[in-house]
Length: 276
Image 1 (cartoon, rainbow, N blue to C red):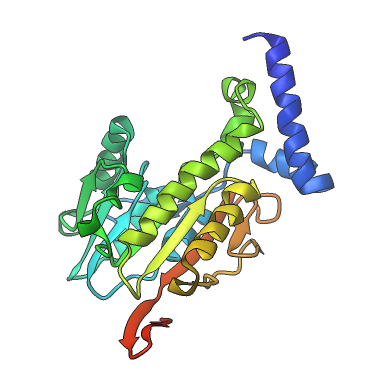
Image 2 (cartoon, rainbow, N blue to C red):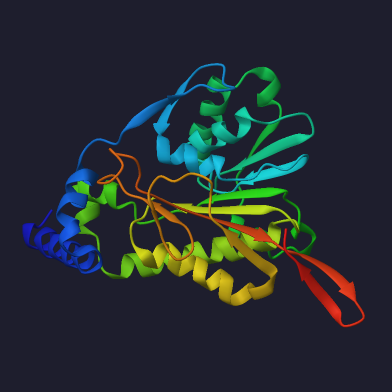
């Protein structure tokens, strides 16, 4: 790896996040370089699974329906799917989706290892592109809840991986935000009226977090309502909450926003949107 290329990429990375976080970036960077804080999650599982507490909060932010199918749109490696599956009751099922075949194999193994037979049969693993599924009109409104933990910059990983840091450019968050928007806008079409959608990333760039959710609010207006998840960890942003490890003893990073799809009731004037 050419040292000059690595140096220039690292300098661009530092300048980009310093511009966002100012003097805080020094301690946030240190926290990102430290090992992530993992905790044991065992509720409703046959064997415990270790994951970051912020990931548990993201999965629990989804409001489970009384019945119907919930979609975990980008499910690998499977920790959030386990949290959702652990609470499944009769009449509820989970579709754990992962586009990458390699990651999908790991997802299936995680589900097999940590779920008992009764819960495992309520979870189906699939491999479609969630952004393209919404192109099928018949799929609109199919899911009674959706968790979208979207692919993101994952700055914690970039900082700890020389190859990834050497390849980093200022265009990366912008490029990923476009993919995230494709996934989020599709997920909203796939969501049933009255149901909840949780958008989450492990990015710390506002462009990939509030920036993406702002597009949802602008496009769908009266059709969507945001509310704040019940947990208080992290800090409030315009549209969600951002959990950063420098302020939460190693939790995160994790951005979490929850949206509800309003229902339309027709009257003499046309469609009247009813919030949940």
